Image 1 (cartoon, rainbow, N blue to C red):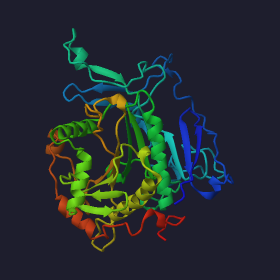
Image 2 (cartoon, rainbow, N blue to C red; image 1 turned 120 degrees about the horizontal axis):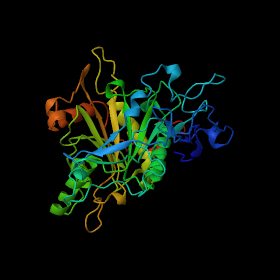
Image 3 (cartoon, rainbow, N blue to C red; image 1 turned 135 degrees about the horizontal axis):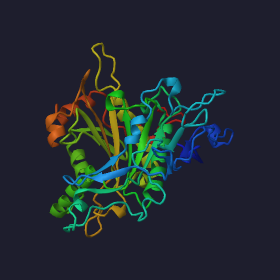
Image 4 (cartoon, rainbow, N blue to C red; image 1 turned 135 degrees about the vertical axis):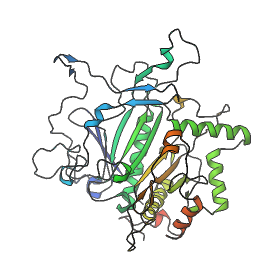
Length: 430
């Protein structure tokens, strides 16, 4: 598979960054160029904001507050209440501009693109120049008794991270599973590019690439897209994973995520897909009605660390995993149900976050994808009711073995007979 990609960066009218990632021959050859100007009459996003009396006040970004009961950071993003919600196909802000059309408030000024990434117009995390002077992210307050108890009960900080949108295609009606493997490979490269860029920012401790698909999941823009967050703190799930990995390391000397992968490979019962460089399996204690984890065979911390061969192979197995997920449930007449899902990439946090390695320097985190759905049966959703929402005590509606057995009905486990090298230019199997 060709790894030639073209990266073109520009700025939107309000100063946000926009980057095109292209693999189409006309872009690679230079025959076609992207439109780089944004004609919208948008003010600079950091412009002063009038107060109730009409007096301009300096722009302030979102704030986050620390929950003293759990230690979690909670960004307060009230401005997102006004974001676009389920627009018509002809007015979706993620679609490309229409040729010869009048002005429209779309985020991408060109009439065609392969993959595009831009800063979210309604971010829950935003670094405002001058408001995160230390530039070192956020740490929990020291374990000391302050003079004023509010110093521990009411802790706030700028939510100085970054939120980006990644559009997987300019076609409003497609989905990742429908894209050629070569385009998914471009998406992988875009994830790697943004992980590197955001991870280099001093205020960011963790980079999270993910996709929400389906209205049932809560998607407000149906255009095929995902998001990339740069958090100025460690997320609660990552903190728990690191804690468990540290305890496991102290008890066994092993790497938790690597040993889980090897145990699943040895058992084979819950393995649902396997390729040259990747294995997909249903985890032993799966929470969701449909849940699969995808992990590289080699110890890798982040997406940018993947080799070209591993990225090629990922594009193949990831699309096949999504294809089978879309066949997991069927209507009474046998019609496949498009699965609402979240695809979440877990990566090694920045070393600035601390607690990411053992005392002897061994990494505790390991790259892996967690794909899961809230659909538990055709027309029935898994609601987080009293036990899950009130106490964080999960109750599963099925078993991991039943999930794996259904995937086994959808196709062979071993994809090694069709390696990434056997992919044609248009992404189909040779």
